[in-house]
Image 1 (cartoon, helix red, strand yellow):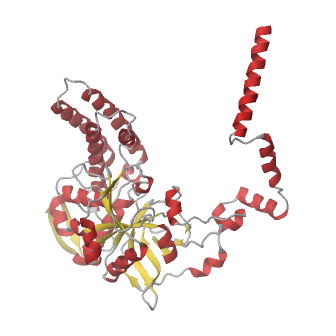
Image 2 (cartoon, rainbow, N blue to C red; image 1 turned 30 degrees about the vertical axis):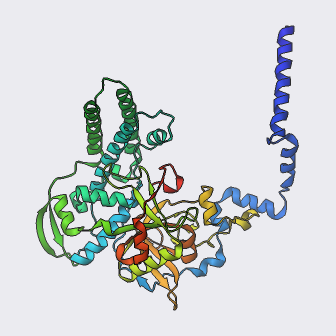
Image 3 (tube, rainbow, N blue to C red; image 1 turned 90 degrees about the horizontal axis):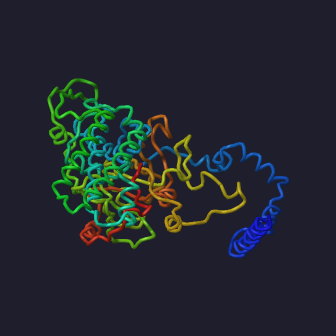
Length: 468
């Protein structure tokens, strides 16, 4: 009994000593907690605000009603709008945005109905298969590295996903062609990708371990590894067929004009359809970005950030916002949409689709202030590109300076301003990140900067997560 008592006392003393050390080294002591508790009185206005915030949506309480009169849907320059698309419960904004840029050109060139769409399901099928191969081959490429290596850890953390960026659209169409939506329509799993993606991730992670184990066996040849990879990809292919349908190798499609009248009925392959309706030289498309945490007028490339193993990594030129705005204005004035991405959730009024840094006054509601600039928000992981949309309009003042911008979204026509989002130029400067623009809208001196050797960045940099 004495031994037990002594042991209990000893543990108690150690706990007391360790507790004191923790408090002295930065932990919250009982006195500090009491100070914090006493700092909040909970009387008068504070009590009323607490009761309101506890029971309501913070955005509704922080909404700045003095800013309501600022909403204006007039634009001095706008690319003719098309029917709004809907990515549903998926992270395919990058694909919808890239295809919306291409379909606007096809509609204008061939006088197609405004609701014409390319098949997102078809391109998504090959995107998922290519990403699966990219993961498995990257596991083989890094076979000699330990499981604790940063690249290996990143690969297993991100074996596949439905997010992406514009180079994926370009590489997939170049390799597999494209087709109208009617030839391969959406399925439940293309519209609701989470379950399918979760199962494919699980399968790929197990496959990755198997390949690493095989590769560490000295008797395993390169051919054996590639044969095993193909067996694994056959399983992924079947999972995709069950979830998305099997991509047709040829199809018959009836082309109609804007009035719905039949123009022709022809048989196509995905490649022949792309050659006619999406015949783009993707080498003329360039990505620019505004990242004030890194040096401007330099080219950066993100390793492993691609959709196709034999495709291109995401590469961009970092520019000040004023340079990017000039290119965007030139493109819109020439009736050409652009792939655009931003931190969409910041200060977004979801009812109106209006984005303005003055939409919400969180500081007044909580009795504090939020003062970080764009550089500081990026550096502290408080902001980054989250969503891609189609930039289609700008409103210029009498001196040609932008007042506001508009994007065609892919969340259906009931969201925002009839499916569009409108942002002030102040919001554009603070939360816009990426733009894909054609070379003819880029000044010659700026275009030449793309020739420089890129600075390579790791794929786990949070600013370069795929847009969803």
